[in-house]
Image 1 (cartoon, rainbow, N blue to C red):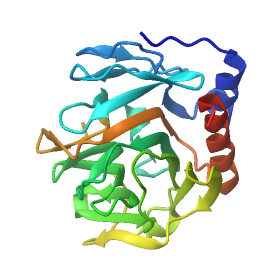
Image 2 (image 1 turned 90 degrees about the vertical axis):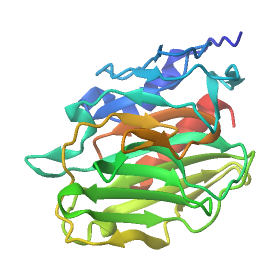
Image 3 (image 1 turned 180 degrees about the vertical axis):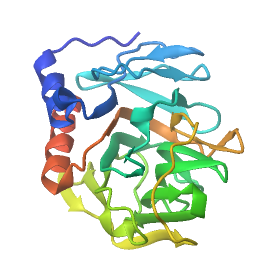
Image 4 (image 1 turned 60 degrees about the vertical axis):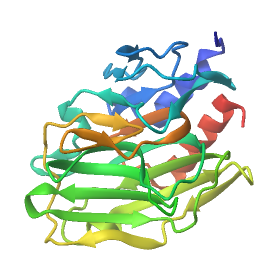
Length: 269
C-alpha cells in the first residue's frame, strides 16, 4: 500500500499559484488515495471541493512518485469523472472566459490513437474543451462552440515518448471570436531533458467549420483519462498521471512555468 507524508507548504504553494486563494482554482487532484476501487472518491484539495470519482476499479495499485501518489491507467477501461458544475465551463456573461488545464503524465506506450488527458467533451453532443494526445502522440488543446460545431485549437507537433514524465499545461485567454485559437497556448516541461520548453504549440489544430463565437455550458462531466462519444467512453489514456488541475485564469508563460516547476518539486523529478 502506497502512503506519503510531506510538508503541506509545498502543496499550499501550488494552490496559491493556481489561484485557489482568489477562488479561481476549479480543482486540483493530487491523488492521495492508495486504493482506486470503483466509485472511490478522488480528493480535490481546492476550496471548491469538486471531488472526482474513480469509475472502474483500477487493475494496478498506485505507486509513489516523490511526495505524492501516481495513478496508473490501463488504457482500456479506466478513467475518473468530476460531475458537471458551472465552474467547469469557462464562460462568463455568455462569452468565453480565460482558463488553464494541466497535469503531469507518463505515457505507457504509443498506440497511434487519440488519448484524452482532461476534457469536458461528448463527441457531437456536448463538446466544450479538451486536452489530449492525438494519434501522433502530439499534445493538443481545443475549445468548441457546440452551437456552430466550430472547434478551435493548437497543437505541439513534437511527439511525446513513452516512459517519460511530462507536465503539459493548456491555456486560453478567453478571447472567443472566430480566431479563438490565437488565444491558446500549450506549455511543456520535458522529463527527458528535465527542462522547461515553454510554449511548444506550433500549429493550429482542428480549426474547422464555424464561425466560432464561444463555448456553451453543456451537461457534461469533466473526464480524466478518457472522453465520451455519444455517452460511450473511449480514447483511453494508458500510463501514469498526477496533479490534474483546472483554473479559471490564463496562467500565461510565467505562471505556467511556476506551476510546472512546483509540480516538479512535489514529484521530485
